[in-house]
Length: 105
Image 1 (cartoon, rainbow, N blue to C red):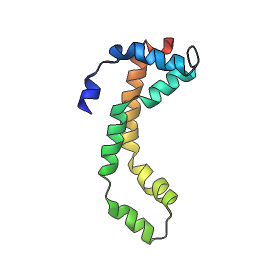
Image 2 (cartoon, rainbow, N blue to C red; image 1 turned 60 degrees about the horizontal axis):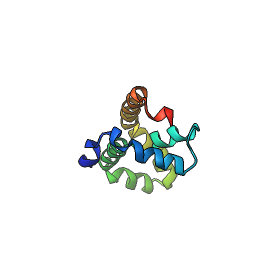
Image 3 (cartoon, helix red, strand yellow; image 1 turned 135 degrees about the vertical axis):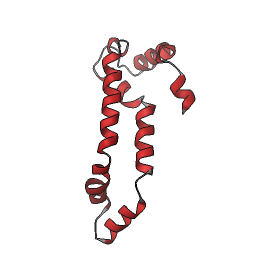
Image 4 (spheres, helix red, strand yellow; image 1 turned 180 degrees about the horizontal axis):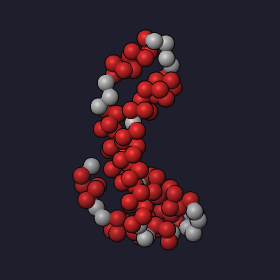
């Protein structure tokens, strides 16, 4: 994880352009959307660590009360994820605001 975060985005510009061009996304709106959504290791790490901190007993108690998996996620897990979602939105918003390269793909 740490090695991937230490690699600056500038060093991967040629490879990123080749991938975008090979998928036929060059000069489309989908290129920056897919790049912003799928290349953020920090967001994945934040969500993963936050979900690992949620006790399993919450799921078990909801299951005993008769809740299905979707209800457990929607009524218990998702509300607990709001601080992590806010953190990721702020971090990603600053990244998107300060980025000048990806919009030109």
